Image 1 (cartoon, one colour):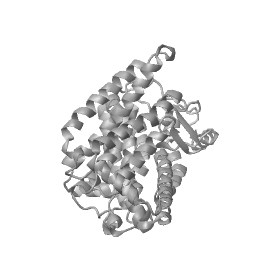
Image 2 (cartoon, helix red, strand yellow):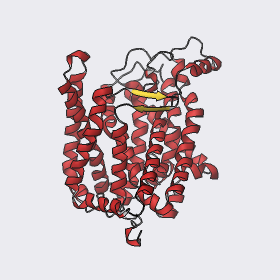
Image 3 (cartoon, one colour):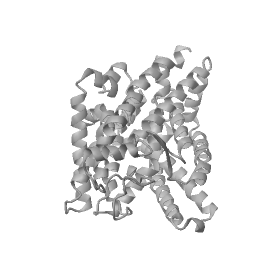
Image 4 (cartoon, one colour):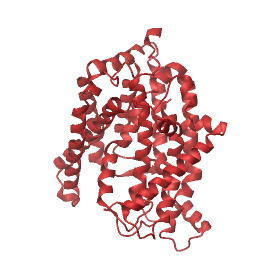
Length: 423
């Protein structure tokens, strides 16, 4: 490939703004999990540990204190946050492949994504979910818990399900890189097309999103999950997530400062439109979804399809609206954000332990739900941040979870949940 095809190193305002999203994203992740115990729609009693469909995997602690505001907050994050992770993670895959080649890229992904997935799922998830068992256990002993854990027909992975799906996306990206050997200019031309013809690119993206999501959602429902061992995924969303990941690959191929996410590109210039569209489409999705929450036989296929379409457009508007707002307003530097970005990936890996144990510790407290949630969030942020900052001083750990210095020296910094996911 000619030298002119190489995307420039990132260092402009858009690059810094996208980089700063890492701090914002990790704060959202911790907040989302911190408030799950206090959602208004949860049943009065915790979910039994041994009974299918094991809904405690999504809601490990159920508190008697509730606030409907958390339902709205979680609905907003649920409609776009995971898709946003895949989009962000794809942004820097192609530049990394160009610098490293497919084999080195995959080796790095295996070390920085595959290994943490295995370690956290095998060692930390049993620790994190012990309080879930204690809520309904007749025998609270550790030995009894381990017997019940091993008797499960699956190995709960918690939030780590994202990592194995992302690793699969990276493998597919590396395969594409090898497949188009000699024709890689086409990927860069597509990336530049996304900027120069942004309306056409984004319209095609929305159409493909509907094709990827609606048929699976109609077939399996929007919320059902499948799990084999530690590998789980939402049945309606694998193609949806793949599309967002490869959209990120296409957008980022020519470099952040040259493409759709450049500071002077139409996406950032039209941020007021996104600021209006994102909440309006979110409300539309919530309204249509609420209409489907009746007996299954009473909902027409047309209403289901319309509700699923509203998810597609709400997800799209909130993802790209977040990008537009970040490019417009999040281009500054902050020592606090720099530290948070450096530790973001590790915080993602360990935070669930602190979330679940803190929620369990506050079960008996006679405090309002908002106070409990704020306490869990603050405690989780402090404990996960300090834990990873300390572990990051160990060279082997820093090599895997990343502390930001290696990426800075390389001239490339990637957003992450998690940092390792992108670069």
